[in-house]
Length: 187
Image (cartoon, rainbow, N blue to C red):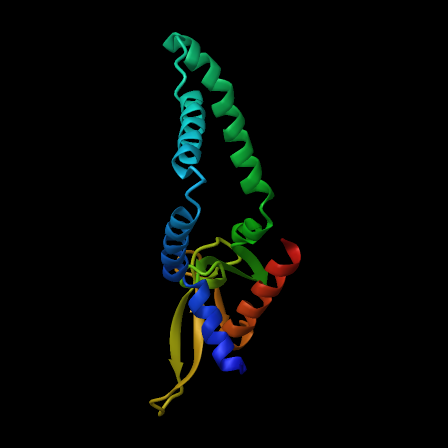
């Protein structure tokens, strides 16, 4: 038998529909061939055994409600501590607290965004902040006299009048690369 036919046969035999129908036919065959085996007696034993197991879980205990509440408080407290401990110890989420850093005397703040709910995060909403008062810096385009194209950009603080030129601020792609690097190594 060649590989292709063998693969199709294995797919057919492992198909849930084939297995289900095959087991029904096999059971009917066994029941018809082996009349001396009392399958109804075997099924009755299995049924009684399962009913005893079920009765164990439905066993009634006469406890007052106040006692159940007192017993449940330590369990709730224990599970609360366990959940808190898990989230503090989970190394995957530690870097999400890293949302501010200083590069070349400029403060940068950002958020982390989950990319399509995959668990991979990217820097999102990156802003430059004033090193003096921590206000968000605004930009103003500068034009050379007699030209209609922008020559540079000036970043200024609307609160304290701090100013810095575009050439003094690192490139945004470089900042994102530095943030990713520090997030991987610090956290």
